[in-house]
Image (cartoon, rainbow, N blue to C red):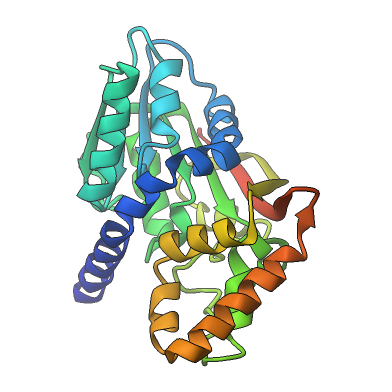
Length: 282
């Protein structure tokens, strides 16, 4: 219990620290990832009048799209650890004129809702960071109505996501970068086919579909790519802090050089690959 509490507190602080950066880069992020929101909303079979829960809403995705999909008559609750991230989501909801959505800061693995509350649960790039995924899936099954859907996106394997791994590969030449434990919370925790489905065993959630999807993230320049990752990827900051100024400049130059290998015409095109998993409560 204590370990869980300490871990969650650390995650909350980490995500709160990068909340301003996520708002700064919101337009670029939405340009790269908007299609994922539509996929999750579609796979969850959202329609008017439904009640929807979005786990790990961050700055509002895919909760904002879901609020439009279930209107009129429906509602959305977005949950995230970071109140600062949710403040961004609330501003965006206000700008869009959405009145059927609310955001609450809480641990998504301990849901404070009655049984059989929601028609659907959405989660974009959240579940792999949870300390106890099977327990979280039990909670999701509990709050879902019978026949309700969980639609989740998680990152696929390391080698298929240079968008994320390129700077880590370069930094590893300058500083000791700990290798991630595939069984520990982290970006690639649920990267393998069947990982999430196996963890749902015994929860009452049954597989509807699992698909690996590839796409591309676009950047105007090598500098924009570096600035974006440096701002958003909180785990990279301590690694850069270990470097002397001269070495740091060399590492940054190497990262931008590697990013330049993905140049196509007048922009950088970096592959991204993720999994979309849809489960249904029987």
